[in-house]
Length: 583
Image (cartoon, rainbow, N blue to C red; front, side, top):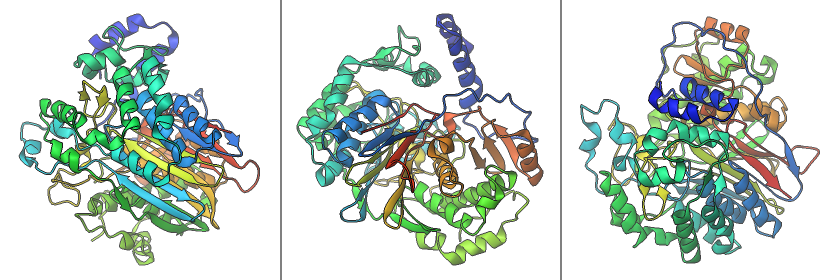
């Protein structure tokens, strides 16, 4: 429960009834980050179906779907003027840094997939953050730090950001327009400002106590040191100046003075260990994406350390042997079967996924027919095992506050990119001179030093990100991805099954209530019927309710290419801000 002394002044400033619902949702809903103990099915919650549903938007020539309307508009503008999918993606990413600064940007990193239609090839770039070369690892394991705050917040949680180098590499490899042109709208909005939505107001309210501790962040995100309501205008001239200069020179200048000096000074002043040498040495890595056949579809996704793709693929390959459609969408049998497969794949991922430059990851084994058959034979159909053994655990309730965008252009090129600061507002550290928030991706390492993903020098932590492209007979079917931390593979699987197995229109698939197995707890949106929950409880699941529609379950962005009808249909998840735009 949040401190009511913080709530009281906010309620006093509320100007409409909607804000009261917002406060209640934050206090009693998505603020929970600790695994619950549920001994019996939860009492039925009031079912609220009065949310803004996802909409289907169709275009014939090109489309951008991402987490903010201004970012989608920036990408659409580039496509309409003749730019390609990567040009549009970079324009949207720069705008997202401005209008969604709490979720992604130059202070973080990510993973990109680019489908080159003319070459019929998929390119993957890993621009994940990297641990410093020299680390005092003992600071992360102090007995008095029972909540491991040193791993999650402040300078000690910051890794070397990868976005600047990643964006530069993507532009160098595939871009056709100059970066100053692509970043112009983002720079303008940083200077003149943008108005926040109710959802962004809720995010700021949830983090107001931390924002109040930093004078600069308070001046940007708060109104007279209090959380603003929807309609408040945020301006970020320092961030605009940074984006403008880097676009006119090289984005990689971020890793050298004066920027590296300013970034390191901010990190070190908060107890962090990143040095200028670490920034100077950062390089993104080209990796081979994973490509697996699921029924008649080719599913292409990111490889480790973006482990969400591998977890998603193992889940789908486990489910491939079942007659999913005959179970009925969101039936108890369907939810039980899908949840069990997700739980098993996540167990394997937690045990094995790490930085492939340091760890051996048995990708082929995890996706092999022999192993998948062995798993299916060992899993009970009607009961929930208390524990699952991994092949011989990603945190189930940790935050996951990321962004995703998808792009398709007139030539058939496709982009799917997921990137993040990790938690909303990252480490809580802002570089004063740059107005730039920095990541807290050290929290994605495993505290177990013997694991495949330990806190260790030069490593990139494993990630649940899973930007994905799905083809059939060489033609695009679905370009998709989502934020959501450990829930990413689950959200992806649920939307993919709804569209591919059940033929549900994309926007309706995004609206469907979601669920997530956290051990034997089944976290769910309360739009699931009570009789379904009762049947699942009888199998051994412990239902744990969230809101009727909750940003805990991600924010899927997707473009669907149906067999008939419009050339492409885009839709943005109603759980977060987002929009589709095209021409």
